[in-house]
Figure 1 (cartoon, rainbow, N blue to C red):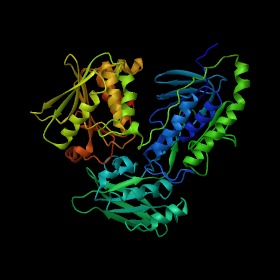
Figure 2 (cartoon, helix red, strand yellow):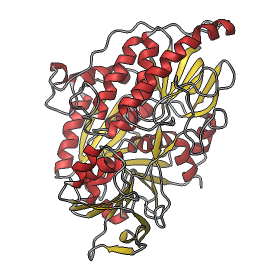
Figure 3 (cartoon, one colour):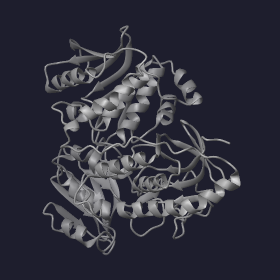
Figure 4 (cartoon, rainbow, N blue to C red):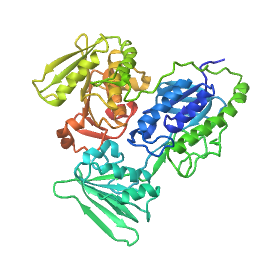
Length: 540
């Protein structure tokens, strides 16, 4: 009998997966939630949620963090890992990840969907140089410029409204005769003075050299093509929100999916395989919202509850016990425990201390500074962060060369750890900073043997710069991957830049989207990448 077998593994930690985890764990089943990026999923980048029943106003991050705490308190386990392979057809399911292999009797697939490229001429060429897919991540790069939003659904409408904070004008390009989202949202967009709308229209081509300079559109009702041309010495943006692509590649050959790749489920969220259920945006459904994702998760879990006892008995196994948890309470901004005049709250410090105590070496944060505001903030951050533990210290060094201000990581013996933060680690990059230290002077996160072997074979000096925005949820993946590689290879240096402080680098490399990875100051790679993908690029 194997007590390490879970009753259920939930693949995906968005609202659907979290809802399922709450219901399953509360019913005293052992639960493991595996999420490859950020617990909470894509909704975490939504700054304002106003249509979730019973919650007047919140953010996507706050809402899903409450769900995570609920699931944790009931006994659910969480794992941040990439799922590499799933075996669903046997009665005992197997989930293989980059952090180990896990087994369960039931599986809930809540892998979601990601923005879809629509394939117009120039879309791939100008991705990161004017073509973008996340207004929260990239909107600020288009401050004072014109932008086009492609799409007429909820995401397009919401992001068009958000982009008016930065762009001097937003033009929506909608293929249909009208919006395809709720009328209330559409009316808000239509009434906005800085938004122009073209119906029955599509984009044909994006044109430019280093950056976008022109775009061609066609009115499908009249057949007339028209051209937008940026003003002299200017560029513009094209934000694509034209539907989603379901994340079913890992298992579409095992379970039934439709012609578009969406998971086919019955009214109980059951797939074509016994013991396997689907929930959220990955499924065929008419409405993709947090409320419907949560509903799917609840239905899938309560349906799976009825399947599990007989299946466990048939397998003649004993599954993992549900761990009794100390009840964690959500922290609110007006809590005394969250009050802080600096960068790190008392609650954050309490959570960090057990991690830092695992460090094998003393870490030194060398603050390389000049006489600018960023340097002053870096020193204040380092002073506050190192006060958490005597395993940390900081030094302040006035730069006398052309290096960029930042935090340079060293160990107690004075060895350069080849990890640099040209930023005050905040937002989504605070976690990547902590993990960088954990990997550099602590036990380290595991890396697959094949990947580790490939990393160690790199012999040429390699500098990797990752350009980020602290509001970007995709950036930390690239930052952490490059830093983990630098830890294992003395020839590699990994730098992270908050582009809001380095506009000269944005202009030098013509960056209009993050994350942007620059290898040896010449080769640019845009978009989210894991350690295997980065390793492949470095070995190409």
